[in-house]
Image 1 (cartoon, rainbow, N blue to C red):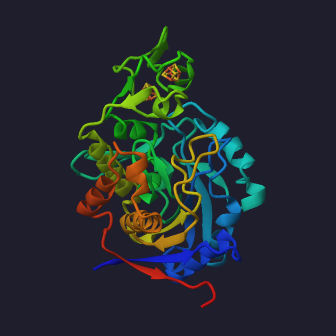
Image 2 (cartoon, rainbow, N blue to C red):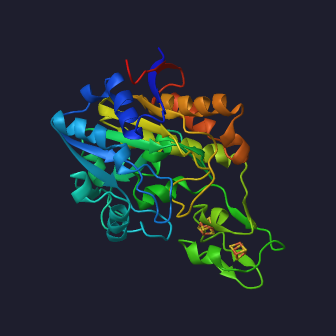
Image 3 (cartoon, helix red, strand yellow):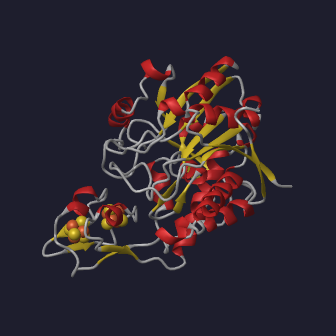
Length: 355
Ligand code: SF4
Ligand code: SF4
């Protein structure tokens, strides 16, 4: 039985937020969200990032939830890497700078993994890679969720969609680390100019820079930050089959994050400003395709599959594979289907804003 994925295409005449609401309503997602506590998961964007989904783009949907009796709050977690979202206080200020203040949204912002990202619940999943996954504690306590995803590329996942938003975005710091323990970076000493950027950002102090950068694999947690931040492209990742392994681990974390609320969770994915890397990058980035629309579904696998195919159809090729050839985003979807997170078999239903 295919899952339904609704698409409201972008139009110059309609604000993105209205498009999202239209897709949300047509998909009937308001009816599956419980009255009471509802976690809203998005991505506020690292300061300096210019392509994150603004509050204006999700506000109409949030207002509908409030009208329906929900008590929505924004749920976030601390990042692994050094930046301005690596603890709850810095993250709170960064969110406000990007327009997600209580004054603007009327929704509390809760850091569901605590002050420093170490407050989690061990959720039993009994799967190929994990028996238990470490999910942000207070998200586990919340009966219902709406996952607002900005679809992007990603240096390790290939595609950053709803599965990644759940898996990395709702894992505690320990949970993020457990997903990252495959693949290791390698430095091309001839290309390295010893600028020190990688060492400055490495969250585990695994890099020493002398005449060139040197990475201590024993300390490295394979977060991939150095890979994306090196201005000389002097760092590569030694993937083998581990690119698939990383993707499969994310699918298992996504399932764990939704345990007990898979039937009461809704997904909106913005295929808009699809940058080659995710909103964790505090900079302006190139886009991989035009602005296509907003997808809505109850199925995180189907919505990611639909996003990938929508973009491939528009561009005539798979932009994620082309830009990140050593990654394996399909493994997120294949394994997601195998473990019951959703299905890759979907029916795309285009909804006309004026209908
Ligand atoms: S991949 Fe390893 S060396 Fe590179 S920033 Fe992350 S922890 Fe540091
Ligand atoms: S960021 Fe790149 S160029 Fe700079 S020290 Fe690290 S590896 Fe070398």
